[in-house]
Length: 187
Image 1 (cartoon, rainbow, N blue to C red):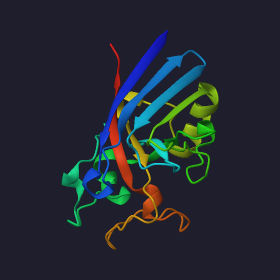
Image 2 (image 1 turned 180 degrees about the vertical axis):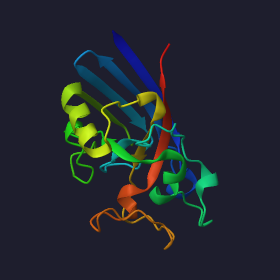
Image 3 (image 1 turned 90 degrees about the horizontal axis):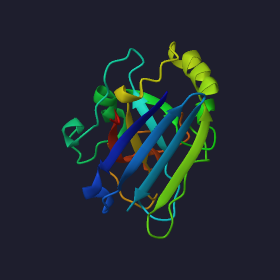
């Protein structure tokens, strides 16, 4: 049985970024394969954008972050501030989602107009096996997840209080959320 999930991806931190990144995501579960398609518009131009689904390993329903999550009131919702409502980073939409290797340099790159399209077919068996290793369950529960798109130019001045350093290798410019959307089951 084919299952389809979608997300309407809306801007986050657009007042700081200066652009309203937006797009759509589609996940089609077709037996042994998960087909992922994400198309984004008005992202920061000519740069790599990390993108993932986030959620709670215990199955709690994740929600998208809003400016209400700006708990330190610096005008930016950074990655650590999203965790209370969205959970943790789970599956990357990169060259090898099934490996769940979050920090890497194989994510999509936007063009001169801030557009990119990501399409990937992933073995569900491989993805679920790695998901179980990392999170203790092989149930992806897509309709309890949210998608985030990240990344702003290094030149963008961010408040010193902006967090997001992942493994001391990537700073807040790489991990700053620029758009987010709730994944829902399509009717």
